[in-house]
Length: 269
Image (cartoon, helix red, strand yellow):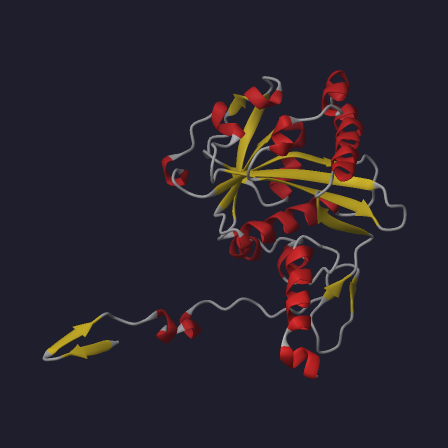
């Protein structure tokens, strides 16, 4: 794309709006119905879940999350169960968001996860590791306290990861780091995480009671392409299905609806 200024002709190259996006590898269409998804005719593939996912915005919700953590972590680490029932100062730190899953039939909290971004403070995991050079200077998030009540027969962890993925995209976060105990490693790998360093090292975590953990990473930017390339069975659930029960942007939607209702053309209609 060239522009002329007097006698000088400047060539800035092709602008993004003029790019030949058709030359890129196209993603497959949103076809193929994931398990439990409703037939929607010409509309998007939609799946109703037995639970909803939202963001903690009250003291009452936070107390329920603490009780959930005590029950979930007590199942794996009985000696530490009482600690997880206590208030956690990290929950109130800037740039921390807590997600919860609530069973729609009973109202019971059945899962939760917490993310912290490094927008204003280093991640907790940086007390124990040094980030690889290619990750320094990036806006990252760390996922901690991922819990699901034992025996709950629905894909809560997968839905939490999807909700966090969408939330991170909205905040321009490039990737998510996590520390996993060896016993839970397979779950994280199934959720699309990979080893951060590529050497499977175990690192004692200062914010994990000094226990050895694997350090994992999930790239927000490339995760869809990676999942598609691996033909991962959860690809349709995470990237090709609309889940109205992921209510993580409700305040934005409600504010937008309110603004539209106040506009003159809305009243006239």
